[in-house]
Image 1 (cartoon, one colour):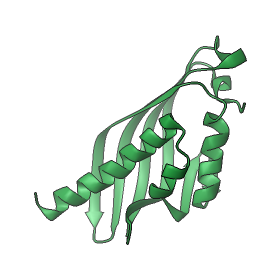
Image 2 (cartoon, rainbow, N blue to C red):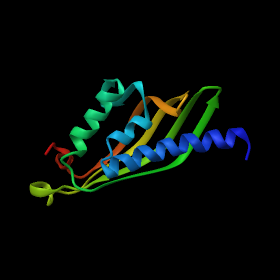
Image 3 (cartoon, rainbow, N blue to C red):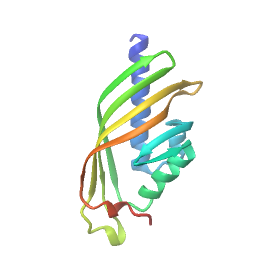
Image 4 (cartoon, helix red, strand yellow):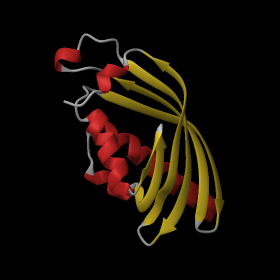
Length: 143
């Protein structure tokens, strides 16, 4: 396997780790996904890994099961920097009093910039570009 294929796979592994961490509610695992100085644009702009993780946690922490499906990875690598665009389809199901709400789906693209660190690739900038929403957003309200 050539170097570019190995690097491309390492970036895909980080992207997949993000989805796995969210669905498992593994907040500590996101330290291996985001750079400490990352910026995330999920509607609002969040600065720093801690702020990004806390925002994600505030939405998913009170949600029932979720599934973050990723695909169609487009990746370009330039030395220690890379960019990617990944299609995403994200399903969120309610829990407790919100279990009867229509599950909420967000469909769009993760548009990311990555930086190579001593510990591997990390996302330094993420924009979730939502194209389609379906269902009841209230599924994501905090517990």
